[in-house]
Image 1 (cartoon, rainbow, N blue to C red):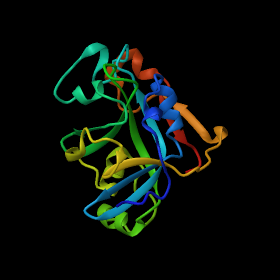
Image 2: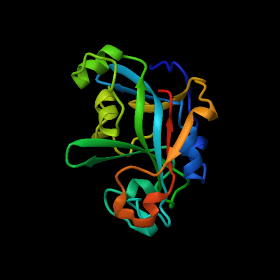
Image 3: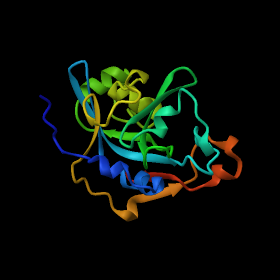
Image 4: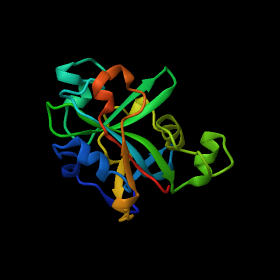
Length: 197
């Protein structure tokens, strides 16, 4: 039986109807994976919010339903993981409620548990730049599309609250990255990041 180092986030956390608020509140929480018998984790330091309504940057904007996005319309607290450019596995947290396709992309983590394993997985010996990108962090925690749709309240992937303090003064926000195709919606300041990590 897996013993959680921190307090598991309740599913009610993800049911928040304000995806932008969830995105901000995920900063400082700990993303964990237990894959192949190995436990690794990292402090969430960068996120982006995507709303299923009136947000052209969202994969499920205004009711668009595909095989890939169907999980976004399900219950909050599940993983939405998709392949970007055919190589990068991007990890998202489904929020809001059944039928409303909101999600938060986890863009960066600060490695915490299993640092040596993370370095091996990333083939990097230095501590810098180990998981400071959405494709890097999934490689570091060995999160792939095979875990798409899993519940985030138990292994193999879950998020904890370890009461890591993130000061409001250390949180910055900006437009999201790589969504120029979304036109005016690309300018929504829905990216949050911790400035000193």
